[in-house]
Length: 332
Image (cartoon, rainbow, N blue to C red; front, side, top):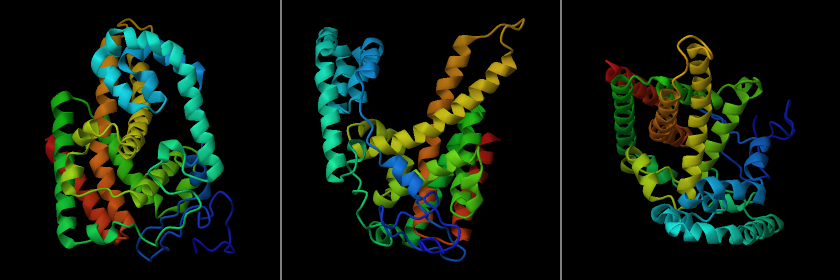
């Protein structure tokens, strides 16, 4: 049984993080296993330093937009630079002298957090790695009512229908494939242990673990905030929690966008008689990237919310079916 260190087949790769983070709910027949494996926790709770070798190129290429300050976890001043185009260029020039100090301050704070056993700076809103949490999310009672379940089903309708209409209107169908993969990963990741051992799917399974862990410790929100998640994220860029959530979905978008772009390059036939339309390819790239994030965020949040609430399989599959049906409806 998950969580029993003496059980057969356990190892550092598959053992639940009972002493590492929390005593998550046990496996319930007909429901998901919320195993946050130790390997996932160790990967998530890492303390990577910032490097001048990365900050300076970002300053050079994206400095007037505050790119280097976002990298150094200074979103407030980064946003201000974005709005003022680097203070008319003057702030951008001054920052070339300030980068070493900003890198040093970040790394000192990161090292202090690691020494004290606190969550890394990029996860400051989450509990320390050694902290034991309740057997269910703190928001569970608030989100478990039947009325909220119905509202979440409406969110799935809106997200699915909007995605289908977007794909039909712009002729971009790749985000649909990415969201269908997200649904499959969410459903199978808590029910099919072999998924974490398959070479190609192991990375997606670990990503799903990180997403579930994020929502376990952070309320996914109600139906209204889920339906407008993408818009709200734009206004919440200064909040670490919103940035961390967006980063997870943007990772998903990046993976699938890269895969689709490779296929587009192969299809175009590099060096072929028709050549390569780089402008069209770049436009498709960004549309796929941001559309995947825009539609995956509400669908992923709804599904993970109900997985964490330990809803029965019928509820999870029904919510997924609603999204799929309305995607198809929007397409036609």
